[in-house]
Length: 293
Image (cartoon, rainbow, N blue to C red):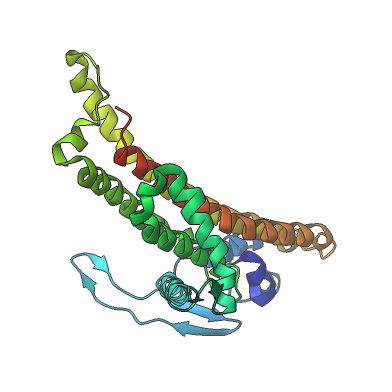
């Protein structure tokens, strides 16, 4: 959930109750610093409950299968909502009557679709990238909706979960390799890992280096998306937390405008990170699809 939303929907109340308990010998033993840290961790990590003001919805806990916890968490719910929004966009937002859009949803999303096709896919692949357009459109809109959900009251940012970004990066890795093998053949694809003209004695050294570079690309995608979507929330919480830690309402005249400004910046970052992840994935796939050596 966006930090500014949490501030409005109970952040200050929760932190204040912790401080009040310390001041009046209440049930909490933590000081304001520790209490603020607990609130920060609670609202920036995944959990098995969703909070709506003072009401909490406990999500079902499922058994572990082969060491994997299949319980439904708030980030899983956000992923489902984002997937549903992607389905709605492609099912009802791409309707045409001749050369005219059939509805306002089509008019809204058509420029974005054309941007992804022309400025992300075609700019890297050329017209040969047409078969990849549906994949990159899906990735772009899914990441975009997941990012934007974190700015909606009572929602959370699933891309602030390293497991989500790692899964997206793993899918990119699979596509990178399969695109190269389908286009160039299995053996030629792996042969292209080593630049042509390399002396034979250097090949055993270059193989592990190139393999690490292959894995480093999706790893960078994973960490970049995760860090950017988490950092903004933490910065906003830090600004708002100064009101609690300093126990002064006057500091809010500085920290609240800063928090609002960062929230506006997060809206821009939501679009930017969807673009960066999709563009870099397209670039990496095109490098194996059209090897330069």
